[in-house]
Length: 258
Image 1 (spheres, rainbow, N blue to C red):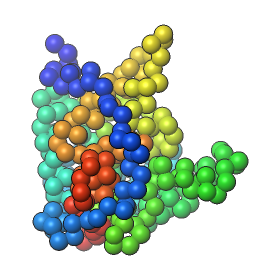
Image 2: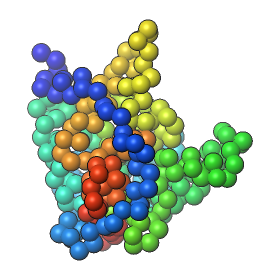
Image 3: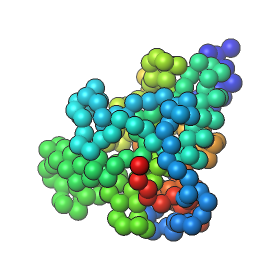
């Protein structure tokens, strides 16, 4: 039997194309401000048995190699999201795997730094031909703008969005085909569903495809939605989740860690 045991079938199941239009316009959806879910607290992922290290609060974090202004060590999530990740971890534990988090709830200072400064600067160096409107559009493919008022929070400010991967328990991560935070089409969740030629093969690409499938299905089956532009980003309860899943409203508004 495969080392992935009963999870092997998920590595063989193709990731479907994202819904038409992807997540565009997600901040226009309403939020159930008075709903029970929005009263959930932020909790520490570690308290739910979920491992990780905040990617932005360390220096071994390519391509940045430096602590990001405003970053925090803690990994916070809404309680409902944390419980679902705990359920995923229970499935992974049976084959000696576990989730590993890069980020959860995110301060607006970090969001603003990447959206307003870091990524625009990198794109200007690499693509000087882009107009300002083209540059702004490319930035938002990978970095949401900071929260724009009560009705339009950035996904990570709600505590429902999470960046993560899978690793062997206490060991190496599974190969996913790109760096975390690779702001390019290589990061698109379905990249290896569509870019592997039938006339050629790459063990690296095939392994990345299988592992992305595993992560995708484990997360989707407990209620998360996958960001089509980032294989590592999943949402539960925020406006992006509502848009991608066809829900009438988001469960979570923006919140603050205390």
